[in-house]
Amino acid sequence: MAKFVLGVDIDGVIADYTAGFAEFVAARRGISPASLPKRKSYDFSEWGVTDTDSSSWHRIAAIDNRMLVRLSMIPDASEVLWRLSDEGVWVRVITHRLYYNWGHVVTVTDTVNWLDDNNIPYRDICFLGDKPEVGADLYVDDAPHNIVVLRTNGSEAIVFDQPYNRDLPAPRATNWLDVEKYVMKRLASMENVGRQMEDLV
Image 1 (cartoon, rainbow, N blue to C red):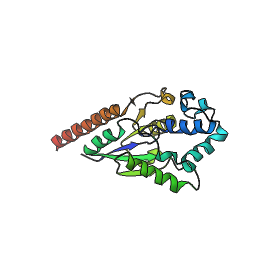
Image 2: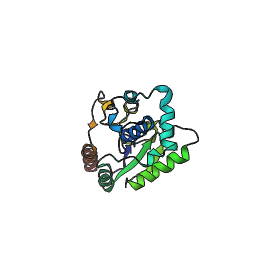
Image 3: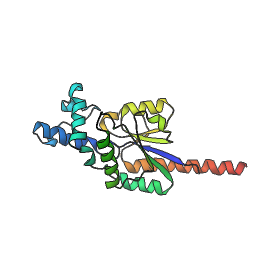
Image 4: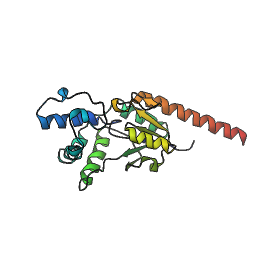
């Protein structure tokens, strides 16, 4: 069977960026993270994070406070990715975290350390925003704009369920076990096609 590449986003898919950023925002305001409204939009507007302070707040959280290395893992991400890897899936981590000038060393270092600390298996990692360029067979992403671009470019993408992407059509995964089921069906379909082609030879 040809190599099957699974393109996996980090924030909102295998790492709980929302919870990590909530702790940062709450600390700046001297309040409890639990007092922040439930996140419903991609831009954190419910928390009063405006366009003018959004970039600086995320930069301070990631670069100065080293938030990226302390994020919680989304449940079952490690276990499912290991099982898929054992089935021959090529796990390619794809993230657009290099937003900030002069912070790339910290961002890359903390990202790789987090992946290792949380036992995430991956064959390679791509730091870029133009995700169709990496050539995966299937993507798992939460960001609405990424899903739209991927699908517009003819790529197959699973929406990893978050409150800010509920308007996007299926396929959708509410958890990593859903992702596993979908990928295993794709692998079975590829194997069936392969057998049919062998029978024709």
